[in-house]
Amino acid sequence: MAEIINGKELAQKIRLEVKEEVKELKAKGIEPKLSVIMVGTDKASEVYVRNKSKACEEIGIAFEEFLLSEETTMEELLALIEKLNNRKDIHGILLQSPIPKHLDIRKAFNSIDYKKDVDGFHPINVGKLALGEEGFVSCTPAGVMEMLKEYNIEIQGKKAVVIGRSTIVGKPLAQLLLNANATVTICHSKTQNIEQIAKEADILVAALGKPKFVTASMVKNGAVVIDVGINRTAEGKLIGDVDFENVEKIASYITPVPGGVGPMTVAQLMKNVVKAAKLTIA
Image (cartoon, rainbow, N blue to C red; front, top):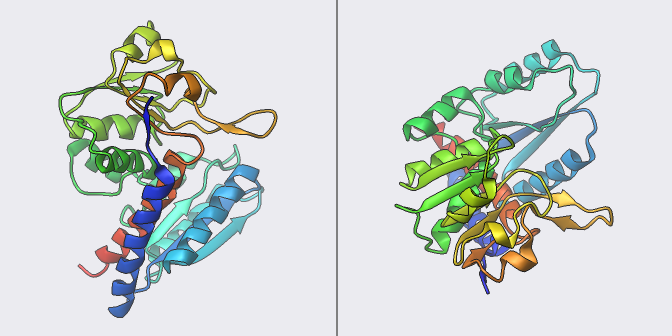
């Protein structure tokens, strides 16, 4: 039976560390502040924004929310981002996705000042990650790396397979694993023999958004399995991209859903906001 990687517990530990850093910054006269932009009404996004707001409150980070209507134009969105870029009291800017179809999310992300890009989506931060330089890293992949580190899971020289190639999780995570000297393979919807490739992995990451896609037959005995998926069943239950009950029997470590990667994402976001606030001292 696999050891469960407790993301909830680790996230709480990180939040306590960040809380101390916030106290130190406030003593120097700096109050870290996160601003979140939400366009339209997406139920899941509302939950995520509420979680971020609660985390900020608990840690002592100031929080400002900008709720824009579904009809917001690209010009209005870019004008708001520009205003927030120029505000000295705001250290982190986060544009909650998805945004309405008529808006260009890539253009919006690109217009956020990369020094305030706490989501790690700006091309400069993506480029810094590829070059192995210091920058802001997308919160979910950064959270996954923290988990591996906390549980002393060897990455160097290991075969890592990432299923999913999104710019939010799959690609940055593959880059982080590569930077940590793993041999990385990315699988996606066009990959052939996906089961065979997955079975070779020492570290297998599922980040494709398909419930119970990774079955026991795809997992090597003793592999570390990280489930990034969050899917809701018809009954409203949260499940991951991994068939947890069966995979747990053969993996060495596994993350649950919920209580695995999810809480780590918010904890990493808090870390990034504090990091952005510290940049203003330099």
